[in-house]
Every structure is written in C-alpha cells, then in structure tokens.
Image 1 (cartoon, rainbow, N blue to C red):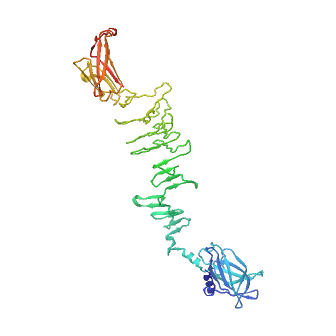
Image 2: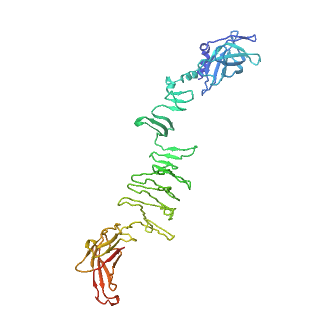
Image 3: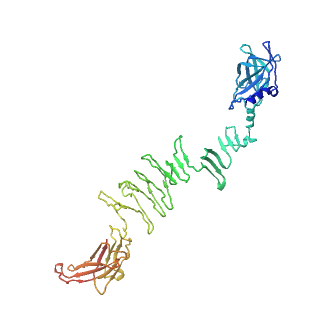
Amino acid sequence: MKNLLHRAIRDCPQTCPQTCQKKFSGWLAAWLAVCLLANLATAQTTGFTYQGKLTDAGNPANGSYDLQFKLFDTLAGGAQQGATLVRPSVAASAGVFTVTLDFGANVFGGADRYLEIGVRPAGSGSGYTLLAPRQPITSAPYAIQTLNAQQLGGLPANRYVATDASGNVGIGTTNPLSKLTVQGGGYGLTHTAGAVTLGTFVTTAAGGSAGFGTQSNHPLNFFTNGGSAQMTLDTNGNFGIGETVPTTKLHVVNRTPGFSAIYGESASGRGVYGKSTSSRGVYGESASSEGVFGISASGTGVSGFSTSSSGVYGQSAAASVTAAGVYGKGTGSGSIGVIGESNLGSGVGVLGVSTSPTGFGMYARNNFGGRAIFAEGDVAQSRASNGLVKAMLYVNPFLPADRYIVRCYNGVTGASTGNCGFTVTRSFSYPGHYTVTFGFQVDDRFVSVTPHESNNNVSNYGASFRFESSGNALYVNIWRSDLSINEIIGDNYRFNDASFMVIIY
C-alpha cells in the first residue's frame, strides 16, 4: 500500500493532467494538478484522499494555505451537491499538498460530479480565489469496483437481485411480489451455522408443495419473544407442544395446574378425534385430574372405537375411587356417567381389569340406598370365578325328554334360551335318578338341588347328588316319603320322580 501511494504521487501529473492558473492577492500564481485516490485505510469509507500541486510563478509553492472545496453536478453553473468543505492551514511542500474530503455517500449516485476549489493564504481572512475549470471526479480503485457492482460475475446484477419502485426485492426475478421474493425451485432461503442448517423448499413435482425446516439432522423448534422452544418437530416426525422431546406423533404437555393440555370443541362434529389401527387413538394422562375429559350437550362426551385394541383406555395412579383412569358422572335424572356398547357376538361394551389380588376390575358403589349395579339383561362370569351363579335350571321329568329343561340360565356363556347348553337324562329303571350334564366343570363349585313338592302337602321330598367322574355332570336322586318327617324310620322312604331345581355357584 505504501508503494501504491508513492507511485500515485509520482504519476499524478501524468494521470490527472488538468491544470489551472490564477492570480490572487497580487502575489501568488498557482498551477494545480489533481489526482483522486481511494482511501487506503483498512476499511472502505465515504472519504477519499485529494492530492494536488501548487506553483508560484512556475515554481513549487511552499507554506500554508486555506482551501475550500465544493461539489457540483456540471462543469460550470449547475447545483451544488452536498456541503462546503474547508480545510484551513494546509501545508504545501515543494508544491504538493494532501487533504481528505468526505461529502458522504448520497452525493455519488452515479451521475457526473465536478470539484470546485478555492484557495487563499492561510489566515488571511480574504476571499477565496476560485481555480478554474472545475475538476471532474474520476474513478478511484474502490470506485471502479463500485461501478462493477452493477454486475455479478460479469453478468447484469438484476439477473440475481432486483428492486422495484415499491422497494420490493427480488432474488432470481425482476418482478418481486413482496418485500422479498425468491424465485426458483428447490431450497430458497438458507440459514446455517455450519453443522445446523435451516431452509425453505419449494417444488412443482407431484402437484407442487412447499416446506420449511432443517436441512441437517436436527429438530425444528418454534418460539416467540426470543424465549425457549414452545413447539418442537423432531427428526422422527414427532411433534411436541410444551414438550421438546416428543415421544409420539402429537405430544402435548401443559405444566400449568388447572388447564387442559388439549381442548377440542365442535358445534356439530367431534371435538377431538383420534384413530389408531393397533394402539390408542387418543391417550390422556394426568397426575391429579382427568386424563381425558369430555362434555357434550346432546351427544357423547367421550367416545372410543378400536378395531383391535381399546376404544377408550384410562389409567390412574391415585388411590381414590373418584380419581379413576376413566371417570363418568351422570348429573341429571336418568343420565349415565359411562356407557359401553358392543354390537358383536364376542364384543365387550365396558371392560374392567385389575392385576392386584386385592383390587377390583370393576367397582360399583351406592351409599344412598339405590342400586350399585343394575343390569338390563343377563349377567355372565367365567367358570373359575366366584360371585355369580354359573348355572340354573328347572327340570320337569314328566314332560317329553327334549323338554325336560323348562327354564335355564348358563352363567358362563350367558345363554338363557333352549336348554342353555345343558342336558338331562332320566333313568327309567330307577325312578328319581337323573344325570345333569353342564358342559363345563362343576365338581369344584357349590351345588344346590331342590325338589319341587307336589300338591299333596303330606308328601315329603328330598334330594341328594354326587359328582359324575368327568366332573362336568351331577347324579341327582329325588326321594319321597308318604310319612311325616317325624315318622321316617329306617328305609321307610323310596326314590320317586319329581320336578327339581339345580343351582351351581
């Protein structure tokens, strides 16, 4: 840079041959050669170095001079551009002087500019003598590059960036539609810190689509007001609201007590709808309140449907009968808190499960004198479980054999028509002897056999049973005595056919 400055000074009379001579104050004749150089500081500014040479009667001038500089838009006359610059007490040595001028960037819009110079002895207080003609502002090294900025890579700049009269900026287009328009398919705007890259993407393939996200393998966070992430889309496609590490396709967390994580409302359809082909369509979890809560003015508050798993699944860790995984409450007369429905032969409307030996799969409570459980229809239970009747039948052996079973109920299968899956055979060789087959094991259950007393009040009937070897049937014996109970002595009784009932618990 130092060599460049020396070279510029040395070459100045040849590169800027414009001269002017004037008489001022009756004693000084000046000869001026002008050369404009770019500021050689480490960063480009709007100032530039102005260097010239003064002569007195053909000899280089020495001493101090006050110099005045004005910028015009024409060689003569015209309008002044920018401010008037005064440089007092400028030293000239062997006629050479150097000043720094800064008219600002606004005066150099690309049109021609001419510099008018006035000179007087330093501190004389007299008027300035104008040197004519005005000197044209020629290109300096940085200014040459500024002219080249109208091109990018040797091509017109508007091939890449263009602005319109409204201040809209276009990249790849000369007709921007907004403050910033990027024209072209693929990635448009890209913000990168090296390993992490954010970008926009537009394509016309497959009908067209557009996207915004990370180009690198990193999650995309959404935030407001310069705060932390409020929503996160991770690299697995899981989306978290209030959760930066989502574990499901939609993971919503509200850590403010008393407020719902998800609120859905609809005037006629479903407020929240979830569907899954193998797992839970909607999953709700709460440490202190309802995991899923639904309200409906006319329809269903919470409705669940599944083709292979649970339609509605609730779980609660609280040791309270009012903080259930699924809690239903009917507040109106005749209203229903929870309703389950199944229209398939093997389907289940409501299922309760407990894995604790002291827990309850389903718990019903009524502390006000009403019914804790009401079943409109038959109630069934697995054979090995306790609490409900496993079988009930009324047998009349005086009817045809295919009608021995008058009425029945199978508590295992829930059947209550026909023979309910039971069979009764009668021994014609031994009156009062019957075999009742149930189709499931009964020798580990509780049995009650009751004969049906005849209309003759003096007749007494009794019954006994034993388990058949298969364990699935009973041998039932009905006996009768024509004597009163106090008169039964020894074998004074005999087996006799009679109607009877059997209940298996």
